[in-house]
Amino acid sequence: MSSHEFAKPGEYKIIDLLAVSAAREVNDGEVVFAGTGLPMLAIMLAQKTTSPGAYCIYEAGSVDGRPIHLPASVGDARCVYGGAIASGLFDVFNQLHRGKVDLAFLGGAEIDKYGNVNTTAMGDYLKPSARLTGSGGNADINSLAKRTVFMMVQEKRRFVDNVSYVTSPGWKIPKFPGREFVPKQEIYGKFHRGGPSAVITNMGVFRFDQETGKMYLDTVHPGFSAQDVKDNCSFDLDISRVSGETKPPTYHELELLYKVIDPEGIFLP
Amino acid sequence: MSLTEAISMINDGDMLTFSGFTIWRRPMAAIYEIVRQQKKNLHLVEVNSGTHSEVLIGAGCVKVWESCWIGHELFGKLGANLARKVKTGELIVNDYSHVHMVLRLMAGAMGVPYLPTAASMGTDILNPEFDTLANNGLRNGENPKIPAQKYEFAKDNFFDMGELLHIPAARPDVCIMLVQQVGEEGTVRISGQKYTDEEAAKAADKVIVIAEEVVPEEYLRREPDRNLLPPYMVDAIVELPMAGHPTGCYGRYEVDGDFMRNFYSSTKTQEGFDAWAKEWIFDVKDHFEYLEKLGVKRLEALRANSALSYSNKVKRGAR
Image 1: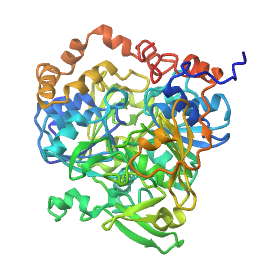
Image 2: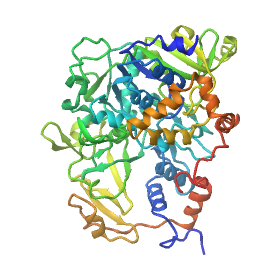
Image 3: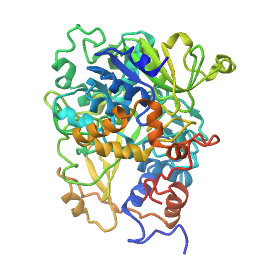
Image 4: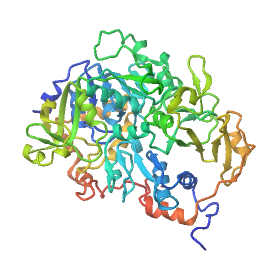
């Protein structure tokens, strides 16, 4: 049995599939902004498999670290170990602003069909039913990176027609006060570099149509149908372009994740 | 200077900012002392917020919070005190993005009124209906620290880059820092990631430095390229070991995740926070009694390995 064979259903967890699917979005040589948790697993897995020349920036200020123990946060001392530079937010967000960042991994509580994301507050912003963590770098990174990949939980209440609050801009942005959707390019002009290129959930991988800016289902994770995904989405999801099943992790990737990257079980319990 | 004296430099209503990032290198001993001295109506201006501000907000010391994020990372998914007090209307929250907040401090550090950016345009961060400081009548010029506008757009006439966002400077009254080393005269050295420490310190009118250790000034001056601030930018020095607990300090000690998890679960109700504050702030006489309560065993496990700059003795995951 080759270790590069795909694992069978039951031999891996959904979080493993999320990590490997995200890792497969990284191209060799790219500069990648990653946040705490799954994005860390994804970039490290990519560096140990398909993209050994990818560079990782953590937003607290570490550049191209070579940690020997998995960081538990982007501010962690472990991010700095073996790094090229330990600087700060001004430096690394300037690099983003300047156009040096190819890809970033982000998360969100709500997303709409154009990739607008809410991480700030649910319900009425001024009197929220739930106050969340806030924008952080999400809005900036989605504004100025060439590509972003969102990792989210697939639920009807999270995949919505209109997010409660636009923390982070998608391909078309609801402009206040009328909330009509206008193309991101109109707002960003010469600073427009791209936008969300994929959304990876526990049920499938989504991409965006270049013309309409709308999300469509690309691959379905093993064990789910396209209809299952559509049923867990509030907006009218395009499932006509499904290209097949998401490739499961290989035994080699699982070995790397559990034995090399996160042997302590910090993000992979 | 004693911690009590240093914190008495802060007035009710002051605008404060801090060193560090979420759960790293926060001046926690100073935060606890602010709560003991029961400062009121503080206006926090910061980039990534974390456990330190959750303590101040829970204790009712804060009136306005201007930032972009709050939480305890892996050890508590959001700022529960802030979330509760936004709902009850006890706290004014004004959102910006990371880049906006960094530029606000940088503009303050440079002494210019604003800096331009293209970050986070088109988002509800800029929705004028959501300008909570304006909604509360706080942009009327009475407080010179609060800018007249949250932001403005202006066309670039230099390189024709279109409409850019101008973000106003932040000029905090006080920056409270936790640093690894300070010289006898006040030269500051920090190690590891610098977060937004330089911008925060230089933007503020007064800088209070809480240092893990005071070292001979001459030692820091052997390698000036490693230093962050000259002595004339520092207004108070307090030497206190482990003054960042439960946050982590590069090269010195680890984040105390168990302590933080317990704090986060306590903050889900006001009663829970109050009980926590009684136990860990009001019922301990000072920082050393706090450390004694934590115990040698716990503190020793957190101590960083000198080669790695972090502890490898703390159990972090499920395996």
